[in-house]
Length: 227
Image 1 (cartoon, rainbow, N blue to C red):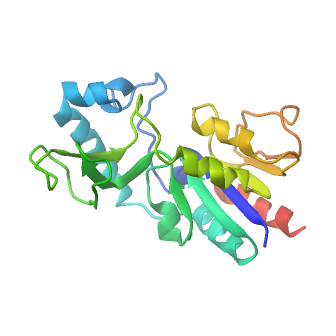
Image 2 (cartoon, one colour):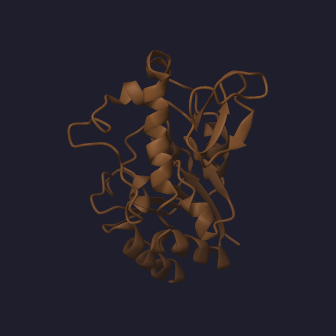
């Protein structure tokens, strides 16, 4: 069975109603990204940061997986499918995907501020005073700007094994996630699904661009892979 590796970004969850929280001017709900998504921002105003992620967590619990997520589950009938996602939502898992690696953390989990391996499932608001076993403040299990990406090495290993690579709903402009495309074996078929693709067929061998949103784009992908 061929190894099908799928890299996903915000575009696959947009049709579920997941807001990006990022405005046209680059602000996240009126905040500079470094205020709500960096260790420095958290240190300066932890209440603001916790509230920001509480709002995102609440929104996530109100939405459902969409057709694109379920289409990727369908592909498991014919391929060894492994998903590497930049998303912090759990919509791939809710749809039924069996192998999902989260590069940037998970919104429905929190972790100790002093032990990154002390991770808890979490669906409520997270507030100051919620402590880990070592009596340190719990924080969102999110990789913030300026922090190491612990799952990057695993993601590289997965991508290196791909017989087919599919990229859905991500500009491939944010590093280190964007570098994963460079780890596939030479001449590996690559499918890029995005309504406004940021790559060109001149840049990569065996690249097929599906200029569409994730749901209908994955419908087309299934038909192409059948052929």
